Amino acid sequence: MLKIGNIEMKNQVVLAPMAGVCNPAFRLIAKEFGAGLVCAEMVSDKAILHGNEKSLSMLYVDEREKPLSLQIFGGEKETLVEAAKFVDKNTNADIIDINMGCPVPKITKCDAGARWLLDPNKIYEMVAATVDAVDKPVTVKMRIGWDSDHVYAVENARAVERAGGSAVAVHGRTRVQMYEGKADWNIIKDVKDSVNIPVIGNGDVTTPQEARRMLDEAGVDGVMIGRAALGNPWMLYQTIQYLENGTLTDEPTPREKIDVCMIHLDRLIKLKGEHVAVREMRKHAAWYLKGMRGNGRVRDKINSFESRADVANTLYAFVDEVEAQEAEQSSAV
Image (cartoon, rainbow, N blue to C red; front, top):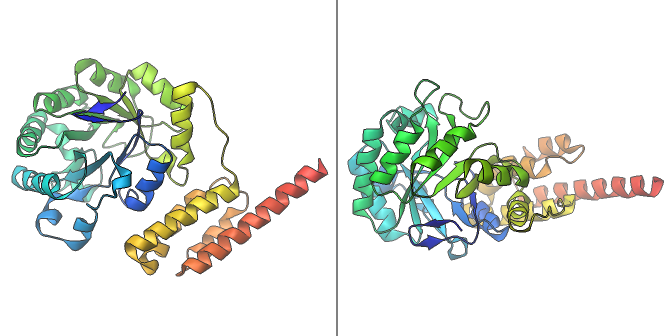
């Protein structure tokens, strides 16, 4: 079983920390679908220290989400350590994660995120200082390297371990690849073979069978699922079932998808108010609708909505239509 420091997960499936997505509304759904560990979206160290209201609200953890990992990012040791101390003392998160994988230029220009991948010595220094300053386990989420000429995954993971890090999650792409191309699981395996702390593999796990393959081929301790869970938390449940007993559970019906979509929206409204939540839900609704025939025109409609009632009425009218078509097709057979 996956164990990070003194925190034991009930399974090996981890929800990735996705920016703009992994707030308590979505994390709680992931937890209800069985995820052993959920990770919050990254928060800036400086924003925490400046008392930025939005950033501080991102540190909120619902007790039902635990165990949970809160992720921070920054480029300077002093501010990173102080932010980690704040998270350690003022939140009920179980784990503090340091982002070392974000490829976005506005993050890397601040010497943060994936920029660290070029310097194992900086990684050691930053992680060691953070570990010394806090009581919670400290982990790192990283990519395999900056580009194909600078793949220091093994050296970087060893630096994390030497510094007292409790685990490392490795995304099998370089910073230059962003989210394109293929994730290199062989390098993830090299990392696993070179350190004694838990290694969580990430990248190109889009089916339960791929999760099994990553565990078997790379030998990792856990599997991190990101984009495959967007609008599809069933992927988490299906993966857990498949890893535990080899069975593939049924796909959700269109109505089941929309029911969960509305639970998601209602939780977002509670968190952020109706106006912000409905706008933020547009991208999520598109993900929940994925795979349903004729969903394009519904997505277009939702992109102009401002109220919960409009979203609910439109989504359920669409589901009624889909079900009527399916009934017609089955009676014709």
